[in-house]
Amino acid sequence: MAKKLALIGLTLLAGFTNTATFAQSTNVNGTSSNFVTTAVPFLRISPDARAGSMGDVGIAVSPDANAQYWNVAKLPFCDKNYGFSATYTPWLKDLVPDIFLAYLTGYAKFGKDGDQAISASMRYFSLGNIQYTTATGDPNGQGNPREFSFDLGYSRKLSEFLSTGVSLRYIHSALASGVSYMPGGGDYTPGNAMSADLGVYYTKSHETGDNKSRTFSFGAVASNIGSKISYNSSRKDFIPMNLGVGVAYTAQLDQYNTITVAADLNKLLVPVLDSLNGSNDQLGVVNGIFHSFATGNQAKEIDASLGLEWWYQKTFAVRAGYFYEDPTNGDRQYMTCGLGIKYNVFQINASYLVPQGSGITRNPLSNTLRFSLMFEFDKIEKAAPDNSDNSSGSAE
Image (cartoon, rainbow, N blue to C red; front, side, top):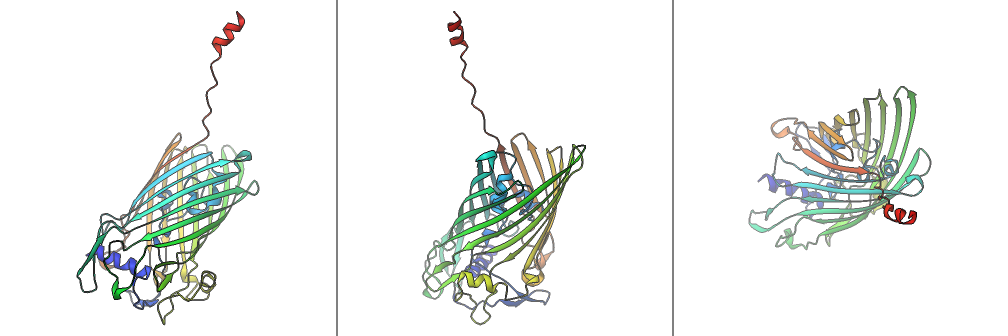
């Protein structure tokens, strides 16, 4: 039953039915809510265990292979020339056992002193096996709802401290494959969309001597800016276009200890639903972005993330964070923690979302785990040919 409820929630977000869905509702605590809803919300699920353990902070923290998701502009500042990362996230594990997000990404630097980078990534979101039912509870087929996206990115340094980058994305969403018919006899096809990310990144370090330094970083990214997505001939929905800014301050205290404090702010560039007809189908993408600043309560539509990271000898990391969303805009509020271990070119990160609430107020994301495996390395030089025999022959 819980799985069916989860699917119903996703299908409402995707707009499968023509039933009016009003933007304004009432929370359990009686406060008025004004939600911004979109299709393919999996695009806003953090696929990175490092950021996941820091309250989903990632726009301005030091770059690694997962920068492709957070801010593609960071990649030219990676310490290594090549990197790959794979992350596995069991999703909503407190409700259902077989929903998961898998993420694979990689980058390669090139150009003068590695001032440019190309990157690619793929996200795959599976909702497991579903027994669909009609509104009256009759069987309506079985299927394996799934969504995925594929990205290609390019980034380069503009100066010693500044870089920019762009990433193009293809999105495919097949949430109701296997359904024998749609409510009201409507048609259904998997949804497809194209979008882009555009980011900037600034970072500058100051050496203070005795193995001490201070680094300030700033990042900004507009993500998922692209076409609407449609699952039938009667409606199109916005994808989760987003504007994010972040700052990070890193202090190397001595040769052993490094601490980073970081914060991100994010706002969806999608207007609240029209309270008359439950859709924004009449708005184009550009108009929708402008309307996102004219509808609802702007301050309450901003999500905030705060993260802390401590490295010991650049080998062992302890992380913690907090994510806040206003009660009238979704009410996601949770603490996170995690660990990281780095050895040579290999790094493994794990994050945990601390349980909060109880009963109907329990956060459905409680106990969420993420695991990331990362490899970052420089180009392996080819061994020089052994000419000792030839040299000996010449001498003779």
